[in-house]
Image 1 (cartoon, rainbow, N blue to C red):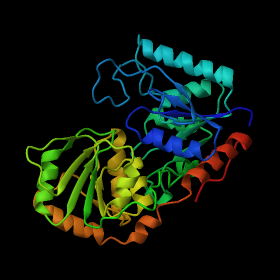
Image 2: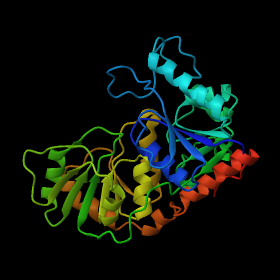
Image 3: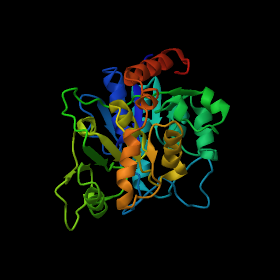
Image 4: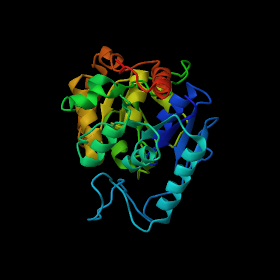
Length: 351
């Protein structure tokens, strides 16, 4: 291993950055985070901040374009975009100067292909959902290994065997809250992640009124309600979501990897509300959580009268189902596997 390990961080949501930081913190000085909007947000970990490649004024951008002449090996390759030109120049310049031993790509088939063209081995982060399109297939084949930020049992049973065989499963990539966090068994915590839209204060108010004996608390971006019941607190954004989750009795949230890993790390009864994502990512993850008895899943926002039963069902789940899906030392083990891969060119798949 003659150079650092680069870790490309996608700019949708915050889960990519959080798991990159967890891995990098386990191996100080060996990782450089790369992506858009990272400056001042990586702590002591070095970073390369890239120009933005998103369409100007885009809302709900899913990382794909609809150009008829776009090669099938790419998802997003707009023409005449100055940001794309600048970020490619910045990244290839960094590769030429720094000569990284490995590039972890979380996630972008274009960055994976660019790194390979720049003679740099890659590890591609493989998320849930149906990813059997040509672009993902080429990124998977071109990578030295794949990294799944979840337990092997959460993988889709229909995933091809050659993909499973190339995958390092990495459960436990989540921050842990201090053990001194106060616990509230009567607290229901709703979490609206950065990768989603805006939570509904009205719906939360209705749910809180339907369960007056419980204390509801919501973190993340939530639209205000016309009337907030006394057992509902809308906190807004917080820098300590792990502490909020640790203090709760039940957690309600989406099925992104960051959210799921945080809930599994804290061992909390979970009501999962999967959000629409490209390739059916969250629906696939929610289906596996439900099949394994690790969460109660609601595909649509529940009616107010349904909340008491849903919460009771979540509390009644076997905690062992969640424990089996979590690794408390996941970040260190993943960092060690990546370092071994950078040094030797191969590593055994994680259990």
